[in-house]
Amino acid sequence: MRFVLRTHGCRANQYDSEAVRSMMLASGATEVATAEDADVAIFNSCSVTAAAEAELRKDVRRAARANPLVRTIVMGCAPGLAARDENINPLRTLPTVTESVAGADLELIASAVGLSRDASRSRRGVQTGARGLLRIQDGCDEHCTFCATTLARGSNRSRPMAEIIGEAESLADIHPEIVLTGIHIGSYGLDIGSSLSSLVEALIARVSTVRFRLSSLEATEVDARLRDLFADGSRLVPYLHAPLQSGSDRVLKRMGRSWYTAGEYESSIGHIISQRSVFGLGADVICGFPGETEEDHRETIALIERLPFTSLHVFPYSPRPGAASVRLPRPVGSSEIQRRCAELRELGRLKSAAYRATRVGGRADVVATAAGEGLSEDYLSVVIQVPGIRRRDRFAATLAEWQGMLTATPIATLSA
Image (cartoon, rainbow, N blue to C red; front, side, top):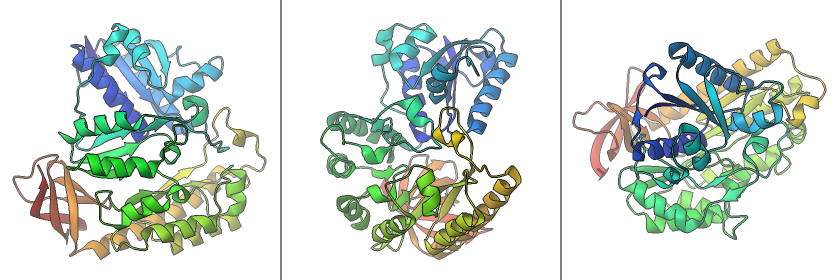
């Protein structure tokens, strides 16, 4: 069997795709580059925005035009929503789609592609990326009014710590960095009597050859133990992507993000980064949420200006079927949303450039992600101009500027 696999969305989806790829290859299937050469096309879907779901549908139709005989399976978040909206916008009526599987149930996916369900237990211990992805939980117990992920993924479910450590040990044989991912990783352990900080401590103690990175994590969910791990120079990299969404308390309340205010977010970030001179800080921000005024927008700008962000992901508000926000009054016009997005993206660009300038001449812990390319511990992309560096090498480097880019010159090997 020849298969093609396409992934839309977050790192949790990327992890799920790696699991599917591993199962398929271990079962004797062959991965090909295009749908034209495939017997089966597997699309791992994202439904976080209308644009993401539209891109999925376009991708499926494109594959069907290239190969009308291909069998297409859609997995991920979109089928989870399709179970509710199948009469409105059905995935199964897309050309060549034969099955849809909510989430990433490997047994159901194995059955959908024509393998025995036992094939779901056949896995290889390597992923295709330079950095290994490790999902520690699935689902979310929060109810942000703009989000349909809870509908698609269900409630929080933590993986057993021993299982996670065992998978990390296998990934560490190949990957110099392991990224802990999930839908809401800050809730890890709440259902099994543990915590994210306990898990990270255990991973650092048991898996000694790699650095660890946290994917998106709420700033107010970084407890004292986790702050200490960020601060003590351990192998938890100094980088945090902490969703902000808005700097207006009024808008945060309308978003259903009741667990923090803008002031609490700002205070949490200050505590987290206060003991590190090198620290990458990213955030998600939504523009044009229903009822957002110009004053709310200016409060968001002011908060972002005060905090040491090194990157911003700025999204226009996107109404999702089933999400509570679609019932909120006072929608913001599309041209106004675009203007606000442009202002925040420009602010993010300026803050990113300012931070990169401070790193010129400094040291960095770099993982080679591709030929001539690398990623620093604080999530800066760098150019590697020295021959002999292989993908997945990890090394200490000095940083310099060249034609507007950061370059990394190795000074010591950290892992091979």
